[in-house]
Image 1: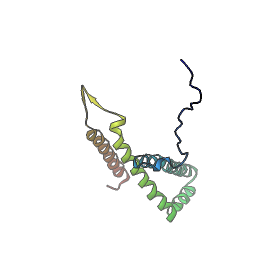
Image 2: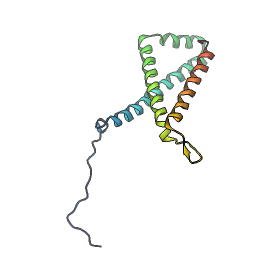
Image 3: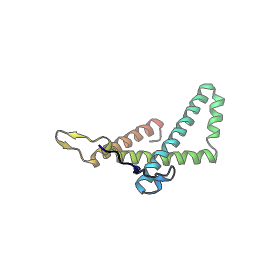
Image 4: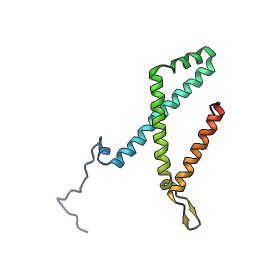
Length: 134
């Protein structure tokens, strides 16, 4: 096999940043990935609350008082919106990530996603009943 002299391989130029602005699908993907950062930050906030609860009653009450600030309320609303977006996009992606087969037949995507939404609703009701809201 002869070596071709003078030819360079084609190297596709991919911008290091902003590559996801090219297509809406990429934007939705990146938005879902960014939401996980906020979910992680909210998890850290909950762990701090548990640590304050373990310290003393006064430390926990100070933590609860801090949660009543407008910035904290805005953080909670933002975290709720990101958690909902993350969950919805993941549930819609679940049939492709986890195709379910019954024998030779594939379960329709809407059924797989619907079961996820149903489980989410049931878990929400259980939490609300346990919290005394319902």
